[in-house]
Length: 529
Image (cartoon, rainbow, N blue to C red):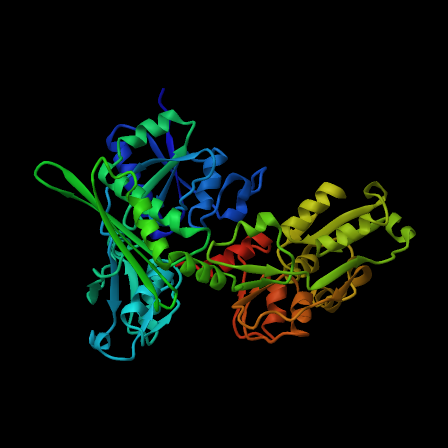
């Protein structure tokens, strides 16, 4: 049997390099290969929640979902980003020979700051931050997120002395700045510099193809490092480093594992190093982990778990369990409904009479209408709406949508240009901040506003240390501001919400698509390391 092996890949330069590397190696063995671009996690819907399938890592879950849906045959990952427990049905099919595993300091002007009290270093990694502060406790660490190219640009644009990168990542995309120092004293992330190929456990043809690319020494070393991480991790993100190396002697080979666990501020550090003969190394990771745990590691991990409870992001709408799984593992999210919705009392006679042009801008309006009359009693000729999810709900529960747009202003512009007739019935909330009615009235279109539901502000005071807030409507912005300051990042589901947020917040960011999954992607993008 022969078939085309589909390799899933994201569109970052590093992801494409890794996917093309595997593609070239498999094609050299005679296999037919196709690269498949994989959309964001929010575009991939499963019958079961992600958590039921054991899908966790933010940098890998998009491809994991595509694998389980049968849309791709292979997922190629930077192995350091892969959670120690793979999702059900997915296995490690191969590990390529490891590249440079070192961390690299890229500095801007000179190295003098290394011998001085003051210094500003950028990194988004807790492990790098902790080890740097352990060595240079008076320096300042600033957060750095994004892909390799954007991080290099941020280093150029800011008054930092340097930033820390994985050497392999820079080398793979031919981005090797002149001013660099290999941080040989810094223990890398487990499996740093290695590429892992994942496949379905049930796909023997693909697994047989991939195993030919497997580099056994790298597989052994990364496996030990990841086992060390698994034993220590305990479910929290911690500054943990591990490096296993194989050294040949005259009559045998031996493997050495170095490991480190630190507090986030670098003030406490526990190191370990054990060596075993290759072939008798089954307990090497366990022995190293137990060595750290027995010397205060358990207490240190407990302290880290307390730190982990800090909330990074607050959602002004309750997050479901499925949505929670879409957030990066680094992000802690709290949520509550900052607006409460209740249907208004609309006369049934109004809803049963024929209405030529209906405008609906939210799912709340749809749900409210259907609490008053059955869908087959509605006699709407043309339905215009805002948002794909509102459109799907209308077409599932009421009938065909004539036209939809992603925001209210665009819909108003469309109605002015293309709508038949000069009158619309707009089912809205008692609180509405969109521009649609005003634009229509300015263009001599009669707008009959019908209050379909009531929106009540119901905010709470959130932790001042929260970095950002997720907003879903202008009303959620208003409600939030009743008890909180506009001193955070405002993540907005759409342009109408963003317009209101910009009146108060300095940093306003808008989701690419006006839905919850895209809003979560927007948040995740800010925390990529």
